Amino acid sequence: DVKVTQSSRYLVKRTGEKVFLECVQDMDHENMFWYRQDPGLGLRLIYFSYDVKMKEKGDIPEGYSVSREKKERFSLILESASTNQTSMYLCASRGGAGGSYEQYFGPGTRLTVT
Amino acid sequence: QQPVQSPQAVILREGEDAVINCSSSKALYSVHWYRQKHGEAPVFLMILLKGGEQKGHDKISASFNEKKQQSSLYLTASQLSYSGTYFCGTDPDSWGKLQFGAGTQVVVTP
Image (tube, rainbow over all chains, first blue to last red; front, side, top):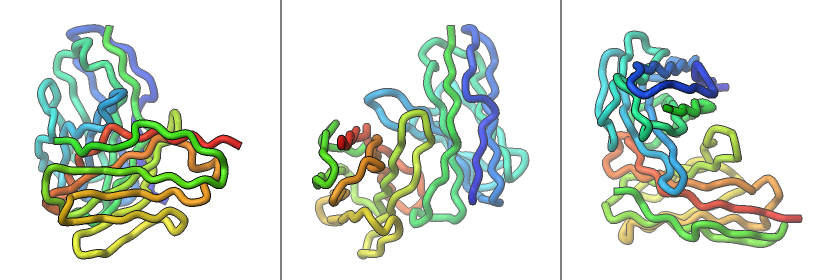
C-alpha cells in the first residue's frame, strides 16, 4: 500500500513564525502536491512538484513556498505565518504523469496560527 | 475556477440511491472522485477520462459528459459505509493539477 505521512497531525504557531510542514511518501512517486482544505471551499492546490527540485504554483501559492530536495519528501513552508493560514493542510502523491493517475493523500496537518 | 458540486448535502436511508453532480466551466481531460470520512484523508474512488475510459471503485459508478463538462457520481443501494464527504476534482489538461469542488456531505442512516 502507498503510504503518505505528514510530520504532525496538529500544530499551533504564532503569527510571524516560520513554519515547516513535512510530507514523505514511500512509493517512489514523482509527483507530489500540497493542498489546503477549508470548510465550504474544498481542497485548493497550493503547490505541486513533478520531480526533485521542480515545482509549480497551484491556485493559491501566496504566502507559501516549497522544497523538494529528495524524491520522497516535499516540504511546505510558511515564511511568516498569519492567522488566515489557519487551516487543514493535506499532502498527496501520484505515481504517474498525467491526469489518469489517482492521488494518494496523507492524514493532514491541522495548523492553527494565533 | 473550482467546479460546482450539488447537492451540498444529502441524507439517505440504507438501501436508497443518490446522485452527486459536478459541473465545470472549462473543457476537461478527466474528472476524479474522492471520499473523505471525518478526520481521515480523502480516498480515491474513480477517474473518468475524456474518451470514455474509467478506472476505480467497482461498487460506485459515475458518468462523464465531456460536451457539458459535467460528471455525476451514483450511489446505488447505499450502505452505512458510504457516509462521508464526496469531492470531485477536475483536470483540464492532463497535468493532474486538480481543482476540487466544495464537497457533498452524505449521511446514510440505518
